[in-house]
Length: 178
Image (cartoon, rainbow, N blue to C red):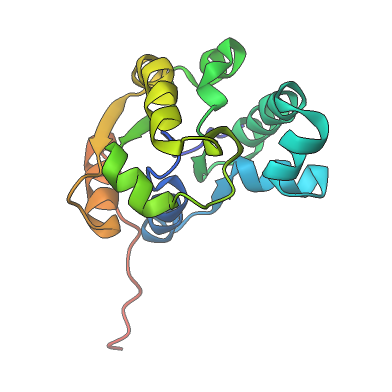
C-alpha cells in the first residue's frame, strides 16, 4: 500500500479541488476527491444525502470513503471540509503528508458563492462558516504537516507553496525538442 503523496484538508472554498487537480498534474499522478467518491457511492449529490438521510449517514459514508481512498490512492487526495471532525479519520491521516489550505472568510465566500449547494452553509452562510472554522481550525492544524494560506494567491501559487511545504518535486516535462 502506497499512501497518498499529498492530502488536502480545509473548509469549503479553500480550493481543495482546484489545487488538488493542479498538484496531481504537476506531480504526474492521479487526483481523487472523497466528496466525489461519496456522491458516486450514494448515487446522488451531497446536499441530497443530507436532506434524505441526514448528516450522520453522510458522515458514515465520508468515513468509509476516506478509509478506502487512503488505502487505495497513491496520488493527491482532497478530503471534504468536515472529514477531520471524525477522530478515526484524523487518526487515519496522522503522519501522512497533510496540508491545511487556510482561507479567509471573504475569499471562501467569493469562491463558494452564497447560493452554492453546501448543506452546512444553507442558513446565514457567513456566520455558519465562521462557526465551522472555530470548531474545525484546531483539527485542521492538528492533522497538518503544513499550513498554506491561500489569500492573495493564484491556484498556481498555492500549488507551488504546497509542493514546497511538502518537499515535492514536479514531474519531469517531456522533451519535445527532439
